Image (cartoon, rainbow, N blue to C red; front, side, top):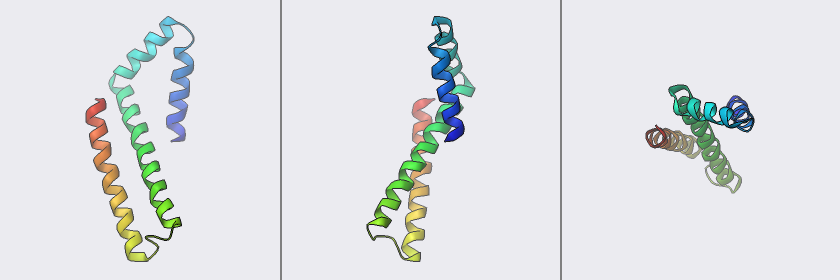
Length: 92
């Protein structure tokens, strides 16, 4: 997520410099590299949120045993993959 934020903040800063800067950022984001960065950023953020929700349930006392903890981890990874594919199709 850290490296994605570097790209996002740089793109925001460059887009605010001038109309040409904004057009350059829009063109870059509509290109293959920009879409890969966008999908990767959204994918990492999705995994981070899903993992955070899982840990919130664990803090509440659920999924603390080894077997249920492993199962919840597999569910989170499966949901992350499915959501990443869906978002990749939508954003492409």
